[in-house]
Image (tube, rainbow, N blue to C red; front, top):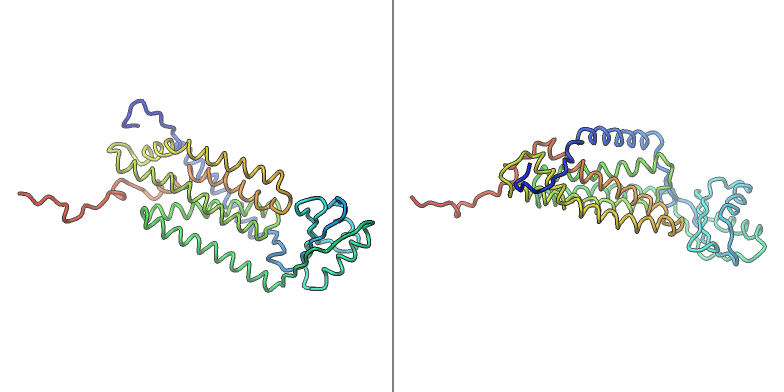
Length: 307
């Protein structure tokens, strides 16, 4: 279908039913994993002690981890912080004096000098508040998105955009649950960034869908959406491709501190690109979007009253 005979249109919606089944399976699997296995909450949410140590020579995080395990601290998380001499130790627990005990223990087992650069203690109540506020922040963000798109486009578009964002967030969080990757504040920030990225991609597609519904006099909703997706495909792939290159650099060379952040965004960009094509647009078809939904109402003073 085209208004222009030389226009090449990719039939994306040919795979819409397969995409629907795939998304249902991924979302259901993610919800089951989140409900049964849960997330591996980081220290920011569970409470505990964080110690930043500076060694006078490069050290192995695996060696430090073994020293702590041998001393009975099996739940400790050891990460590099910028270089092989800067080490972060995270330890769950409610004892504010644990930082002093751990630093003395590591210092005794090291031949050189270990400097304690920073100590932070997060109580379990603070962690619980962060978890609740993070959830409320997510719901508030989705609610504001729904209001904005309903005002900017039309109610069916707002429902499609919010469901697509929920689809992306649930699958990305499900991946963290399945793989047991630690979920901390940087990952929560990545989810909020993912909402913004995926929404931007969806709005680009929706804007073109609305424009084509109003401009083209022929064609079914499926054909209009295929035209719109084809016209925005180049922009979608260019944006996703360049973003992924940056995120891969962060994932490979950014260190363990931002590994979770980069992993969440990489998963989010891949899922978000897929959902912009096969979920956000597909949902419009399930809601029976039509040209009449997007017709600009004629103002009364513009009606021709001539006899």
